[in-house]
Amino acid sequence: MKWFKRSAQAQLSTWSARWSAWQSASSQGLQSSPWTKSVIVTSVLLTLAISTFWLARAPLQQLQDQLAMRPNQWSALGQLVAQIRTPVAGPRMVATLDEVELNLIRNLLIQRGLKPTVFQLTGDNPPRIQMQVSGVLFASLIDFLEDLRKTRNLYPVRANVQATSALGVVNASLTLEQMK
Image 1 (cartoon, rainbow, N blue to C red):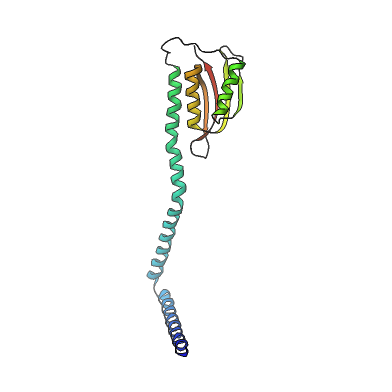
Image 2 (spheres, rainbow, N blue to C red):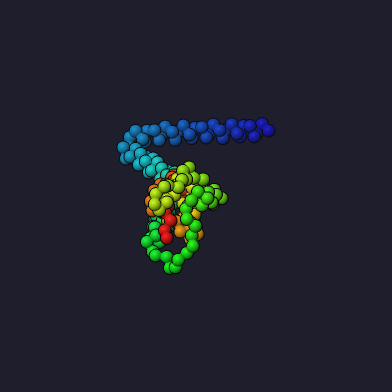
């Protein structure tokens, strides 16, 4: 056991002697060579730039994914608006808008998880539905509008859709009109 302690102390003193010799030599070398200083500064800056790029990559990828989704969302809404202008092939029997029909549509909205903050029937001729929803999935909103188009012949005549910071989630204000 004594031999092990002596050996460990000898190695420690040898190591500390080497360390102090290297430290004094490196400090003298840094003071004498401006080229060495520039290499160290450049390597530190390069390491800092690479680590900054590496850390910023995830938020940039998330932003890029959100922006890539926007054209698809707008094209889906554009297709729905374009269908307004397309004449219907044949006459269909569709219930006219009244308070009973409005309550059925409101219940359909709630069943799909789209809780409107504003949902009202206007007194215009033809009657229109004004609605506002916040924090809903854009795909769910488009599916709901497509269902209204097919079952009740309701089309958006005004739509204000704003993307939120979450991917695919929007706030929307819509005016729907029943086409005959």
